[in-house]
Image 1 (tube, rainbow, N blue to C red):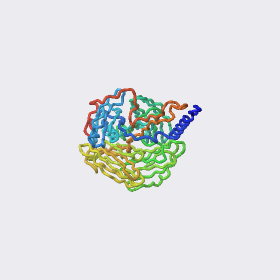
Image 2 (image 1 turned 120 degrees about the horizontal axis):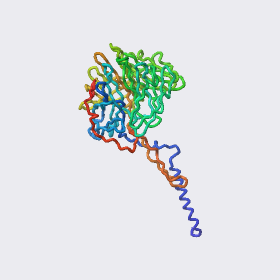
Image 3 (image 1 turned 90 degrees about the vertical axis):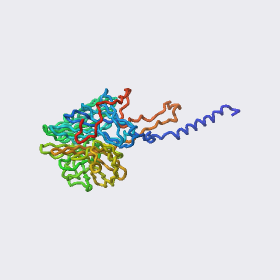
Image 4 (image 1 turned 60 degrees about the vertical axis):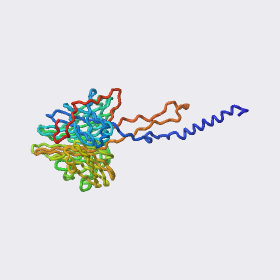
Length: 535
């Protein structure tokens, strides 16, 4: 190299080649996604919507029931709850947090959607339920709806649009960006209308009401598909039926799972009255369905329900009253084509000809704790859990959360495989307004439904919904480094993983300042709800 200085370039070239070879060897393999290196991040904030809280006492008041399974004072002090009318100018009011207790708060004097934001540990250890006692004639009928986080796709099954029957779709947008929604209708006596209403605008922080019975009048059984083509929404369907002043039923429909070839519907509540399974084949090929019933005695496929035909694009019903024989049960639907499924329970008519109705839907098996607030116990009021283990024995932990100053009651329970077990909370506690948390701890999959039954000397009513496990954490992918950044032909930008979506129920961020957490007489604290909650 002393004789020929040009030879100095040789080691430089060798160093560059070595560096490039190392970078190629350590570069992420093609197709490797950020999720493979993601970390689970606990959820510390969630916003849910109660679709129609509040109202005038003369027509019935919808309270918001809360339950906090975290009984530690530290957990309560580190948590906060605020509630605000879903309105761009709505002012948030602080809601007291009670460690390890269930409590209720009156809604505003004017019924409307309420956005509830939970921060801290309570975001994953609580339950929020809207409980309404609506007066129809001289009767107050109960209806319960879990306050839920935004979604982009939802199905509702089992309502009707005949004379005196009304179904209202409530679309709530908690975000600071607009949403656009399409609605499809499937019925039992008419061709499907997958585009019954489309491009429905829902402005930021507002609610839009759509009369579903006007979109498809005269149908006995309806399945509706709600799809957000832009943004996110919190959908809810409220059903009301009456014969003049005689109530025939009112309740909110729970969301049911989207089309699948296997669906499990818990909460086929026992007793007298009509029970029916509603099935919709949303495709263009006829479906053949088999229905398995699971009650306290075991699981079986009733004669005639091993082959049930559901025409393409249509809704079919199966009479369950004759096969469940008044027992609490669940059903598992197995189909040759993807179907949507739901269940309907009606009470027998009273002396005046009145009745009440409640709905259940298909849900996934519980994957973690699921909380249900708004319970009532004592006298003729009963809050029940219907727990179903379709396969192996399921081990669960029941945590009864009291409305008074007492410690939560924890009870282990085994649900025998292939059976449905009914737990009346009145057998576990004398608390008049208990909440309950169901946690799967081992064994086979378990499904659950919450049922509230009220009765007086002359009337009775019922409301229920299946339980879903809310997410406890989110996967947030890390930033990916690029060893080729800055090299010729590769550009200078450092690629990063896509931004993760907001936590479940978190509003989409905007430049607008958050509403202040101010106390307001609009949301006063009240004693736990009783059989007839007072405003």
